[in-house]
Length: 604
Image 1 (cartoon, rainbow, N blue to C red):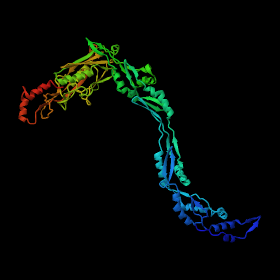
Image 2 (cartoon, rainbow, N blue to C red):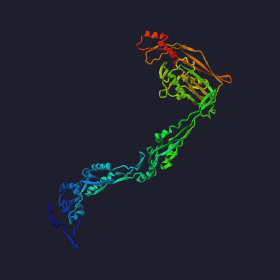
Image 3 (spheres, rainbow, N blue to C red):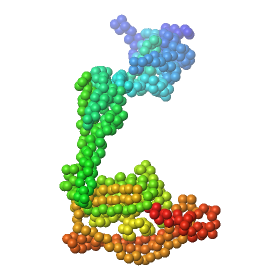
Image 4 (tube, helix red, strand yellow):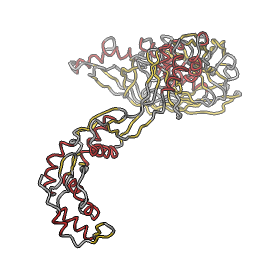
């Protein structure tokens, strides 16, 4: 180090001194000036920064020396603790370093102010702490990485069930690092330079709502007893057992607003599980009306109705929950069932007005396998229909869509004014029979439609067809009493009978003459799905429904029907010549033309 200049000559050059009371008294301004002259723009002797001596150096020399020496004197790593876990931070990556120029400014500053300058006349320099500079972007990036490692969300304690066993979830305190304060904590730690020290980074802890004590209480008081043994249940005379494994699948413990775990049972899920659903399947879930028949013209009950016993999810839960904290024989309970009575019973049949035959009608047809199945299925669905006063009965709603899934098969029906194959063919025989029973019962028609062309086995102007989604057969019961529909069928007939109380003495049908007669055409089809068809005239006809009461006519209602001609359809393959087709159609004893006549009896 360069030798400091002798101080005696500079003191000799000071202004005259005055001795008073044995002390040298110098004017304040003079002392300040003297101090500046002594300093001479250099760092005071004995000034050190982290053990690096910069005393007597010029500013520029001190800066250069510190820039070369300070990095090695600073911490390379800082050990930190956050949320109870330790980590290290590379100071360089965190943007922490010493600022040599500002450190020299700090060392020299004491010599520039009056107090420091005057004090410099009587003392030498000392240790000066270096100034720390922080690269904010790097520091925040480093702290952000620490947050990703040490931040954690709080976890509530919980209780779960699996395979009939209880599992506990340990609660965990959450922690969020205070990143702004952590940057300052790293800066301060770097400035202190204490090696082997641990810097605690500040943050905010979040306590779980459900603590360990609550978990232990819930296990002890509910969870463990709940799956300790099966429960035995009784419903509608059915007795069955539900094991711990099944119970656990539908049990849970949920925290309330106060952090207390409350038991919850998935009632709907438990009701649907096979262990519960299968024993309950034998219970009647829908009531069945009593069956009526005729003794002469009098209505009689042939089979009494049965009530339904329904087990609801709510009732199941109400029965099960109290059993779960019990033991031994006390884990047995009964499920309350909801009983639903049928609309028609032996006791109320007479009160409903179901006392006599109101009307009956039969349609005969040629036997065919598809017709037997489809007519029989429709009859099965209609039989026993109860139509209360002012209710409207619907064929389509009662019978449903004519699909294979609903019990119907492919048969012959009319589509676009010609016979074709489709599911439910032959059901119009049932529709026609219902229409006529309705006609002679005198009830109010709401919707009905005849076939597009006339079919010989049905009464002219008094027949009906149905089509799913487009044409229904509906009537409203305006008799003032209930109506019961009895439906029966054989391989060659269908009979529909209305039971109730007659509103009129008698109802007759009066058919008018055919009008607007139209001739059919002859068509040849090569469609592979072609169905032969015999020709028949089209015409209009009006049928009067005549009501009698007290032996006299009280009113008439007209039913007008328009039939299109039934064209002759001759089926042939594309290879057939026109001459061959003509010869086939002229033959009545065999071949295609014979098939046409056969189908006259096998249509809808």
